[in-house]
Length: 113
Image 1 (cartoon, rainbow, N blue to C red):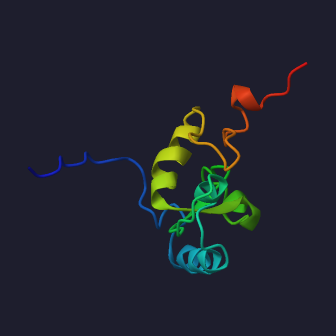
Image 2 (image 1 turned 90 degrees about the vertical axis):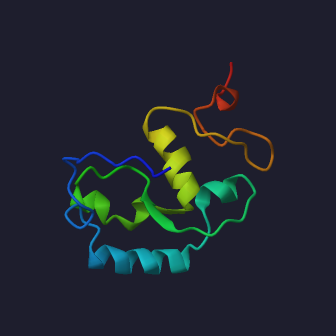
Image 3 (image 1 turned 180 degrees about the vertical axis):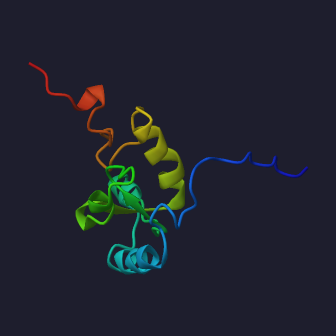
């Protein structure tokens, strides 16, 4: 059965949103320096990264878009699932190698007293 067709969107294409040749070149260089998925590493897994993600969504702000300190390497699965859940107000799933939730706002990680 064929996949359902996507409806047209008002969202501009990737090049119009800043992901043109300059971004592609920067992306390749960043992944070369940071080849592993940051989220997977926090959970003790070694997974090649394929996506350069903006930690804080830039929402068109070019200064934030090009802020190297706002970039992180993620695998496609973490970017498309965990990061999207996080941006939509949910907790990040998973635990680090010591068994603690990776999400800093998880109630188990909050200070008591």
